[in-house]
Amino acid sequence: MDFLFFEQLIFSMGLIGLFAASLIANAALFIVTPIDLIVVFLGSTQFFHPLVIGIVAGLGGAFGEMSGYIIGLGGRKAVEKSFSVTASMFDYAKVQLNRYGALFVFFGALTPFPFDFIGLIAGVAKYNWKKFFIALLLGKVLRYIFLAYAGLLGMGLIKDFFLGEIDIPYLHILVAVIAIALIAFLLWKILIKRRN
Image (tube, rainbow, N blue to C red):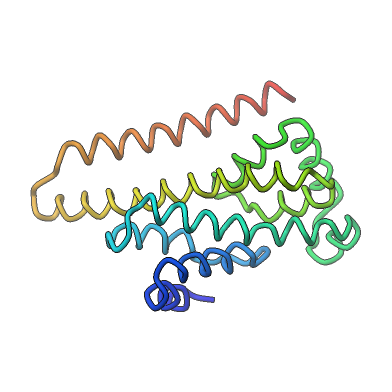
């Protein structure tokens, strides 16, 4: 699965193609797919509004990530054997899942952390699938909205920079988005340190 496959899927089928591309990319366990780059690129084209891109890609991504949860329901030994996951990795993630619950799932879906592992652990732990899905959906939608706006604002900044017409509101919004992402990351780190 490469960039061109997803690009053709999206541009031939529109929003349904974006949903399908995100579903496929997020269902592929431990396989890196370029869906984040595609969302940034799609945001930069202004073909769809960034909120629509984020919601559609987030829905597809959330349904796709459920594959890890479903496989995890098959049991710990099967997952350890099939995916080379060590017992200590399982134990650490299970402690975090039990301690932070939906918040752990939400931040895992929001960040570029390999979420497949969290889905597998949640399935093995038989974590409530509704709570898991809602937190996953919110995290993925917010992530893809950020990425789509980053594409839109980033492309605007690049164009303005090379044309010599930097627009100050773009710069303020970009700085605000980066600051929010850093604050969320730091709060997550502090939360983890306090709980340990």
